[in-house]
Image (cartoon, rainbow, N blue to C red; front, side):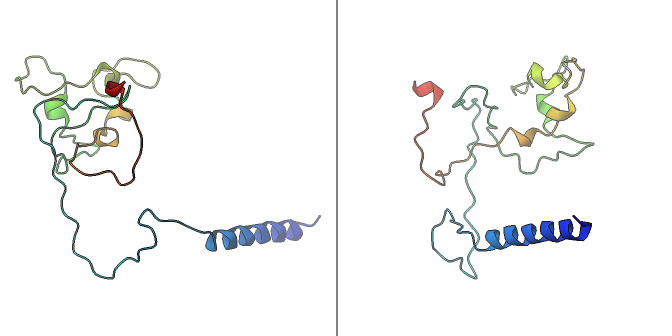
Length: 146
């Protein structure tokens, strides 16, 4: 078979695949309601700012953040979360939860003296708890409810 025939067949398959995607039936969570051209900004959600830890709803769930963290800078050179949550000898007792030992172990299982690079960006796993209704209903049962 000639190369041009192979490339032509591949191109035809790609075009057919893209055409199928273009006519696919996509359902939205909002239903058939159209998006208005102009709409006021959504109401800001109220952060639950507790001094107590928020209970976890399933095993191995990352702890939820009981305070707002939207303005906390987390870059390659700076991580504001570490100011309070890093284990430090003689640290002033701010009553913040210290990072778990798992955050100081790299992928090879070696213990480090600083947080592992794959655990450095806290807000990938830890999210603030807000007082908002769920987007869709579910029948999830919490670990505590069993």
